[in-house]
Length: 204
Image (cartoon, rainbow, N blue to C red; front, side, top):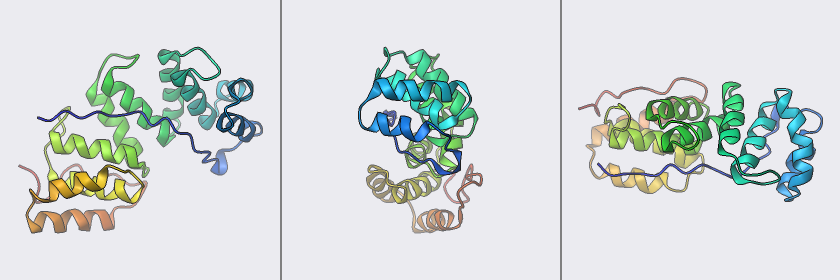
């Protein structure tokens, strides 16, 4: 079985949407301007008050050691709070930290759970990671090239840079019927709905 590495996405997009609160745009702007001390002053009270975007940003700051001493346990704790509120970026980071055993006991089944939650919200990195798990049968995930292809199709559409090459490679091992099923699953799946656990033609 080939090994693969799940990297934590360390970029930060504003993604304020309807969850913005007073102070968070300022915190995000300060962070993006690399004024980490100001970002910390702005974001910490919001995170403690339960603001998911602020919890995610504070988690990134602890993870990177920006404006605060690097502390992976704090990074995990804040990302978990945001993940439990449905923040897809945080769900992906929690999954990656469980997968690598960074600051928490390694638990690939927990990683699958959190990757799936983020993937079902349309998170491209999580879709890519989950596709790898279907490709290489990680953590009890069944080998299913159709689901892997579907996930990489979605991930590529969501901007993941590696998904296209993964999809092309697995397509060379698939039948035309399997490729057609994977493409149909990609077309009909909607963000916010469960991803299929297995395909009709790809299980083995």
